Structure formats: C-alpha cells, structure tokens
Length: 381
Ligand SMILES: Nc1nc2c(c(=O)[nH]1)N[C@H]1C(S)=C(S)[C@@H](COP(=O)(O)O)O[C@H]1N2
Ligand SMILES: [Mo]
Image 1 (cartoon, rainbow, N blue to C red):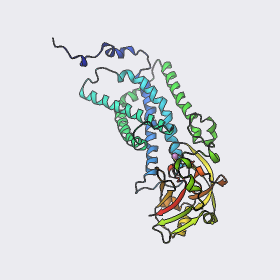
Image 2: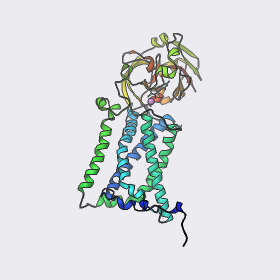
Image 3: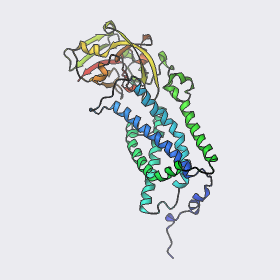
Image 4: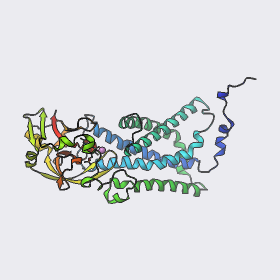
C-alpha cells in the first residue's frame, strides 16, 4: 500500500464540515435573493464610482457638466451610503453560502475548479472594496497602498467576476424567482432581518448628505452643521501648514500662465470686484455633503481681467506646499459657469482659516477634493 504524505491528507473534521451545517438558511433561494440585492448594490457602486473617478480624472473627450449643482452630491451619496448598506447583505450572503465555500475536495473537474476560483476572486474583491471603503471614510489607513487607485482597479476585477458569476448562477436565480416554495416563513424572516440591518445603516448615515436627517447620522464620520461656520472641515489650516502664509497681509492672488497680462490682486482689491452670493454644497468624495451660502468673486471675472477667454484650462493652486489636493483643474465648462466663485465669505462671515481664508474655490457639481482652499495662484493653460 502506498502511503500518502501527511500534508496531502485531509483531516476527517474538514471532510465532514458540509454535513455539519444543518440550518435551512444555507440554501439556494436565500443565496439567490441576497445575490440579486448584492448585484444591484455592486453595479450601482461601480457606476457611481466611475462618475467620481472620471470627474477627478477627466478623460479629455468628455466633460462633466456643471449642472445640476447637486448631481455629484447625489451620485457620491449613493456610492458611499449604498456601499455601507451593502455590508450587511454581503455578510449574510457569506454566512448563507460558506458551507459551499468550504466544500471538499476543492474541485471535481478543471471547469469546476475554475468556477470555484472565480467565486473566491468575487468574495475577495467584494470584501476588499467594502473593507477599504469603510476604513477610508473612517480616516483609518492601515493599508500600504493608495486607497483610490486600489479601490478603482479592484472594481473592474470585481465587476468582471460578478458578471461571469451572474451568468453561471442565472438558472438558480430564475428558479427562485419563478417558483413559490412551501416552507417560506423562516427564509422570509431571515431576509427581512438582513434588509432591516441594511435599512438601519442607511438611516444612521444618510443624514451626512441629506441635512434634514443629520441628527440621525450617528454612524457618519462627518455631519452637516458640525464644524466651524456650520461646515465640516477635513483638512485644517494648521494640518495643511498654511496658517502663517494665509494670514500674511502680503497675500496676493496672481493670475499667470497663458494670459494676455499677468494680474496680481490684494485681498482688498479682490473684495472691491463685483460680489455674488451662491448656495452650493461641499461634497466630499467620502460621501458627506453640506450646503452653504458663499459670497465672492466670479472666477470668470478674475480671468477676464487677465484677458483669458474661450476654452482655456485653469489650474487653481493653494498656498499648501505638499499634499494631493493643493491644486485642482477647472475645465472651461466650470469656469464659465456664473456660480463658480473665488469665495471670500461663508454663511455671511469672512471664511474661517480652516475653510480656506483668504480665498477658496467653490463651484457647482464638483467633488470636495477639487474645491481648493487657501488659493493664491491661477495658472492658465
Ligand atoms: N488646499 C486644499 N484644499 C482642500 C483640501 C486640502 O486638503 N487642501 N481638502 C479638500 C477636501 S477633501 C474637501 S472635502 C473640502 C472640504 O472643505 P471644507 O473643509 O471647507 O468643508 O476641501 C477641499 N479643499
Ligand atoms: Mo473630501
């Protein structure tokens, strides 16, 4: 008799695992319903995530519109709050199917092995997206990679695996939807509990973007109304290392680059230009958003002083020396918009140092990371 090496023998306890799962909820119908909800959740997150990505990295052939002013607020709110609501669904789905995930031997045939491998890619990708997403909005970065890049590329792997999985599982989904089971009570109670958990997550976070429910947003890291001048602050002036330079009376705004004439304005000169009041939200990519009233000078008026017209692109630069958000690009569509301001006042008072004093960009339908604070230079290209 040939003895198998110990490494290749599977312990009896592992072989017996599938038989030990006796709950009737480890079942095809529960898995199918949860799978459909997860499919909708992940595809929605993918679509809204692409919107956010291409808004921040415009591809050249497409410009994101500057109206409606709250469009990005809605897509990013759906992305983050919908993503959070997906967490209980994924946990429930994994619990439902884990006897199958542990099935032994790992593959009955090559094709079966490939299918199972795909399921592990799907599970890994889904966990990765939700875990990194939750950590990111909690300002906790224990991972050694840059969140945005990893989250973006993993989404393609996840959606690819998801589409193949849906194709493979389609017959089960059809069976589930087309037939009525005899003993539905237990299943229905379980699915109802999972839906309630998802709903509770939405109810305790949606106030971060929808201010009438702000008081309920106990699970949200930021809330409208909480922060200096009633607005959350992500990066303080001290944190950005600009507190000194921003308060310097010698501060000037310079318009330079491909201009007819270079323009330099003191704060008093900037305040002497025609002032406009707009109501626009700050919409952070992390999902929170808050409306505010802003007074300031139209960006297009300042650019016109330098003789800038047409389809020039403008880079807004902050006093900040480093950091990813020290500059942002403003497309022609955005700087021609009369709502796009170099804001000087917030909610009726001069901008707080933490909100970008002496001057910040505020534009409609734009991610918070591109609403540059402590502006001191406009570079035209
Ligand atoms: N110069 C600079 N501007 C910046 C940032 C920054 O880190 N540096 N953070 C941005 C981010 S991520 C957001 S959400 C908004 C937040 O604006 P608030 O602090 O005025 O609410 O400012 C943006 N402007
Ligand atoms: Mo942000």
